[in-house]
Image 1 (cartoon, helix red, strand yellow):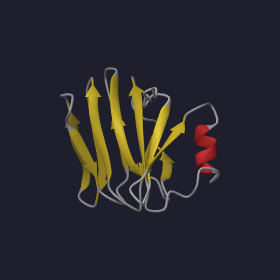
Image 2 (cartoon, helix red, strand yellow; image 1 turned 180 degrees about the vertical axis):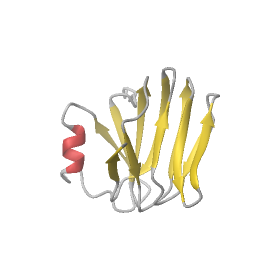
Image 3 (cartoon, helix red, strand yellow; image 1 turned 120 degrees about the vertical axis):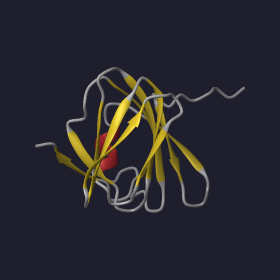
Length: 131
């Protein structure tokens, strides 16, 4: 009998051909991803799960597609940089989600522990520190 996976230890790559590849997460995962050892994620998405208990220390942006962020527990505020100024999306109930449009810089703030599921278009993701 096959064992189930858990998103805390095995992320998922959603491939352009509609197949799915489990990606075991270890201490070298982000280094391998950034160096291209896991591929370029062209037309692919990464499904991941994260727990947060503090504000993010960075902004990020995905130039190749929209990102979906679903709250599973706790609460969080997503802050999106738009031409009109910052836009806030409050996620207060499990199951609520935000769609971060392609090319939009965003960060998250939280005043309590939270758990979120991410479906991220991986190609070309950029980061910058919060000033």
